[in-house]
Length: 477
Image (tube, rainbow, N blue to C red; front, side):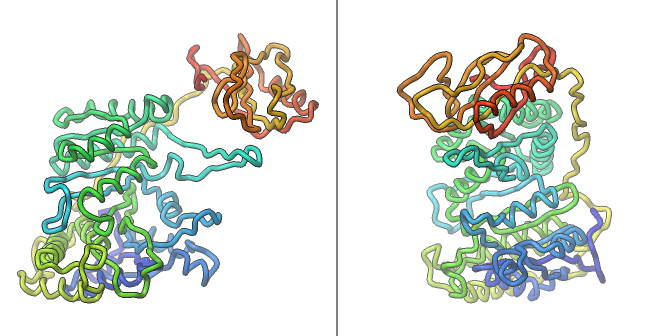
């Protein structure tokens, strides 16, 4: 396997209880695992809001080191305060451990009320890039910018993972979800990479769909889809939509998987409003734990727990979120009781032996693209983003400077010069594109910047504009 930490024939797994309802639902998993003697030793570490309040750090380095040592973790939900500059622990863990694929199965569960009875989807969400690095800037006091980041390497890894997982699970179709009709460079790269990889998987149907159309089609005919692979932000939204299709976010779980590490968790949040009331639904974290067991090739333990969980639903044992009256602890007790009615799993069962060379449930990603050689890139211009507060006039910038000339000025990505548009709402953030008919030196841009500063104009950002083999490497208005 991947160097898992194994002591006395048992996997050592890092455990994060989290905060809010996290400790309560994690306790359900611990009781179940203990009852059937799952060969796992949990090493408890800390992260989240409570960890921040106690230790001043929402994600201590000791927590990351534990996961790196053990290669695998089970994580309860953690709280991220809104709009307070407090980094999401989920995002931080994914980035620190390069957990590039977020896998969220959405399958109809027997006896769970739902409008559909035949859904079996897997949503694979790119987990590192897009808007989630939260690279944000105030351009002016009135305008904020968030960067959307897409790379060839990141697109390759998640798309390759999607095809490999579909192949291993004998799925029929992989669909790339995108907005390449608008985001021609970023989603265009993601989509083009998808189709490059698809050539190696002739037995799978490979197609694509625009994200807004997908949302409509999922509501109308969710059974048409099989495996979906998406950029980060679209994957976040669509996976929650799929959770709603099968009954509840309280049943949604995921695996965050990279080349070296994996972290399994419930999709839902920490729900602090119901914390310590013994009413939370532990089903999602239980299913996340069974996914973790399958990842470790402990399939019999996983299936036994799943059977017992589904038996709860068959018997009408529901928590409050599913219109039931059972508490968290009662739900767990009934699940454990169900286990006793099935064949008890033994650690001596041949299917449960830890096989150190068995990678059958893990996916290797090879041939990651090397960095492209940009030696043929030539600098032809610059986008200068400025603050200009007199909304009645054009910015007082030089419209020509040596070989550079203004191609256009835009406000909120709408051209206002040379095609003057007078009936739009303006803000104090302008984009001024300077182009040259020939290759320029970066020193010329520095001279231009100095010239603009002489007019008392504040520059918030520069974007250099390149061409490669006469192809523009920048978008057009």
